[in-house]
Image (cartoon, rainbow, N blue to C red; front, top):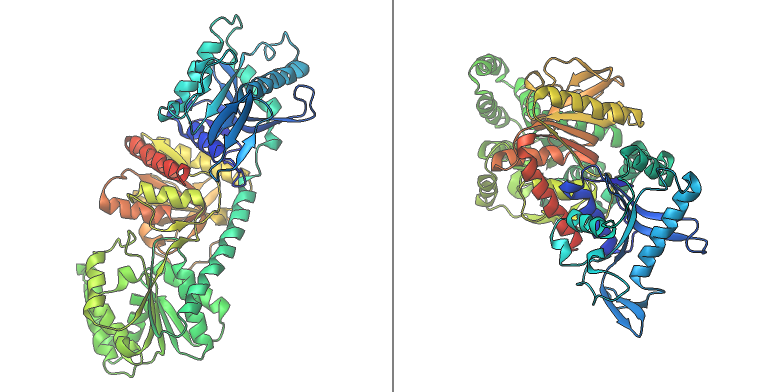
Length: 585
């Protein structure tokens, strides 16, 4: 794929045609080694003070191509060219697209000659031009242009590299200029887009994206206002739709009313984070927070059945029936106490809800599930990685409890790129949520043929992030396996930072000189500005896709996935699906 400078197209770019061509150039596998400069400004253009070229494409062994892009309907009357956009507004062009493209090429060549000299290697570099009509077929050929110099809507059905190669072949067929050296093309690229002009650092982009994400999540609280008068609510939404933040807000509002609140989740790591979070936002309030099994265990140990349970717990650890034992003892312990909680909030409901767990929550809650105040938050689309989501839903429906169901449909966690590509790569035929307009850094895909290759590439990526100012605390390495079975099995440090495995820890306070490692299972419900997802050697089977979906969706601002080479073709097809969807919006 081509190197794009800048690496992502500005969301303020009004031309949908330019956005489409940008993505086609970026994702064509045959543009590997190419460099594409989008919207290159020139201080002087044919005697005018300023000019702009839509795309400058630098192709190894060939030279430089200047592309003029025209979208919408095109017409020409009495020598005057017009465009008609998607809003049916008609605009007159000051000159023909072919004259614009040629002028851009000559202006670029003049700039190179002024800087390096006409006889230099740079001055002798071949320069060609082309015009893209993204939405219509090629206009009737005239002496002004040749058909081979046009890329029309029919051409775009094939990889765009095919048409660009054709343009070079047509315009250089009688050219005596020698093939440019790679060093020559690199100098030209650096001249037009020096490093300081490339793009803001990734740390800055991540920070700005994070600010936008947290601003947008506040809008999700409106759903809580709409359901304020309903005592029993079930919020359902895909990853990134703000369920956990809404659960926190629901718990906070209940506690501020004076309710004794129980806030549960399934994941132990998330339970630790929620406990810290709720202590920060409602210090001193009556609220119990933690993972379901931790809170239940504490209740059992405070009950008459504590001695018997401790013995059973030791036995259960040996035979693997711990969850069955704790549910049984929990039911016995809670049957003999008065329901202590005025409101119950449950996050990760899709993993937690079962016959026995609902019976326990029923005993904890004043008025029970049928008459008490509760809010459940769950994702039954693809985050249900511990069981069967359909049976879980049926359990709720069979109880005949009256409650309000609300759907969260807007992704407010991930950037546009992460949200879209996560959905398609993890097997969705269509997006399970509405994607907000947040533009961010491109999702990075790295492919490995061996564990050694993956380890080297992972270290390179981390070192680059650190060099660009990304804080270690903003990076989480997620693995499909436990640390001792992962590509990092023999590593205690990476890039000079200690690797801290939080998969079996509840403490979320991380020292500054460490990099966090966690399994996807243990990090479920959590999120991080930067996620490096490693050891991915599958993508196209239902159960692994659910795990992939959970892992990829943990990233808010930057996602890097390390795939086994054998799934490269599958991933590229799915990324192309995401791009096609974006172009059709």
